[in-house]
Amino acid sequence: MILRYDNSLTGFCCLLGTVIKQRLQWTTISSTHKSESGSLFEEEHTITSDPLWAETVTKGLKERLGSEFIHKLGYAFLSEKENIETDLIQVTRFALRYGKDFLNQLHHPQVHALEAAAMKTSRERHRLLGLIRFKRLADESYFAQIAPQTNVCPLLGNHFAERFADQNWIIHDQQRNSALVGRNGCCHVEPRFEINEQLLSHTTEADVAAAWRSFYNNISNPQRLNPKLRNQFMPKYYWGNLTEMQPQNPEHPC
Image (cartoon, rainbow, N blue to C red; front, side, top):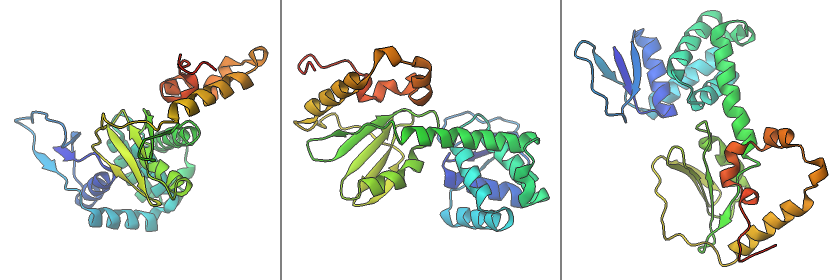
């Protein structure tokens, strides 16, 4: 059987609950967003994304397995690791058999896979909180672009909603063409986001960016440069969206 769902966390919770409740057996889990030709010999079953059912599934798992399991399940799902859905269904079945203490059994391959996937997302979230660079737009809002390896954008919302409580802001995920949009201390994810090419930077933005690059260059001590350590905290993968790593604007030689 081929199972299809909408690739959202809510959709996955519905998928997880349905598979466990109905004891479904499957060969493939696929996205309803992909235009794939089905098999003539396999039955297809589409799981509808239902927030109420997802909440019921989450609440039930939390009662039986604890909040830590729900936390790691969500982070692991957002890692977008290949076949992560299958891994999480298997580890949930394992956990339901062994109870809350299953997280202590790190020698078990399914528990190890859960921990590794959740840690990947958690590390990228922590890293991006210090590496996101906003630019001010002409309408006084703030805009940033990221290209994370995991679907970490939804996990950044609370931090920036609190930090920019009285401002409008957008964090655009270039990898997934989605965005985290914040207004008036609240935020939400736009699953399909298109950049308005007419967005104009604030008149002072070029000067601010040049000043930041100048500050970064001036506090650097070439004699104490440790590229390995710098790459550990500021991996080259993210440099394309870091203001201080861009070449100086010829109009603003600092």
